[in-house]
Length: 549
Image (cartoon, rainbow, N blue to C red; front, top):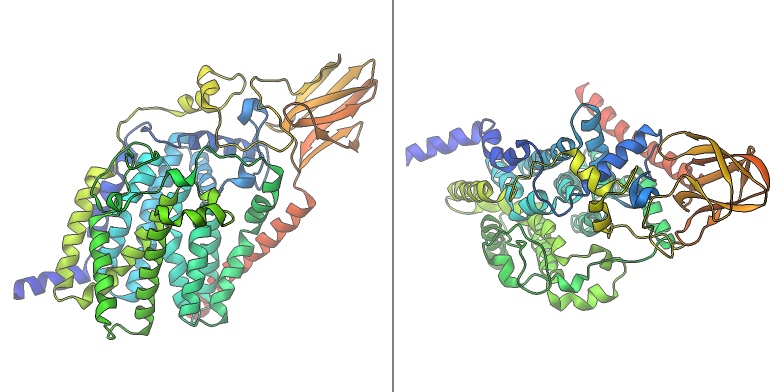
């Protein structure tokens, strides 16, 4: 018994050397050259488009230049930009597009371990924090996100769950955490807006349950302001787009059996119970859930008020998640606004992964809980070595994805097969483009001379015609585009049949310039977000400086 006590004491004091060893199985496949087969492999092309928009001098990136047969698309007006900001940083540091995206996945796994570790360490001790953080990383759904779906935004979102909860617990006493928490809320929204809609209201409920002071609620407001430049246009401008989805949420309810059966697959989510994708909660997670249920049933009061509230909150969060993943919640999916945008009810597995891992702090309520935790780590990492890998290494490089998803200068055969089902067309678009067009085109006779590509988005040219005509520019009409004829801004409209930018040009010769600019509304939102970001950063830095003094 003395021997085991000495080992326990050693582990509780010196666990730093364990961390990189335990994380290796989760990330080793990311170091194999090339790419594995992933569902969302278009993200490599989206990263390319973020880079091109940066190179065009557009900040924040909203409209990208090359998708949809070169018509471009307001991609980052609607799609979570944070993973692609981070990926662009790696790209400009010298990595390829593929390796940059793999680096983002690696960051999501390692940083989520760190954020969960610090949360649990605040609530317990280093050893229990290590247990919970390892379970958090090795939850099977994490492997599904990284190595099956390639869901880079959702994977990065896992970094911010623990950070927000830790800020809720600490912001009332330390103003530094008001800044950290606001950056966490903003980071979650910018990483994956759907996951943010799932988690942030629940985190706010936790603050209410804890009867937090005003500073805690301010972190939510400040986080919303930091990310205002993204989420407000994403919601408001949605009315400018056609609603279309190739997925019906009711086709993707996992069964209870699928949640508790230790199956892992690299296939797709399909209607019915015969999915190739895994929805297994994870054996360590199920054991921790049983522990939490046992503590509630026995009504153990020795854990303290704060932890008792966390226990009730975590168990409630899991109960809500299980219900929302069950077909019995169909009435909610049919009637609650925004829920159809979630597409897949099994997205709630992300909340299950977080809440179940949080319960590791209650292992100390068990006799021999530390050794039970050792068993959880062994189980988690053994399963991890099996799950956390690509099904196959295709060795695909940047050129493969650019050929497949970027139809500029010409659309490849592979591009014609994709259909770009993830892109919702603007309201003015009657027909999706099916070929490449020149920058300027018209059904009437005209001459285009002195064409200058200002950047990947913008151009100017001399247009000559013997009659008045309607000229089209190969970009979708969307707020932010401006057309100048002979230096004067003119009215633009949606052209037929693609909803392209169209404008009237009189007879004769005219200088035409087309540019993309932030709208007045978006400039205001950008300023508010920048100001809120500065305030959040100041709260963090100023508080640290004050504490050091």
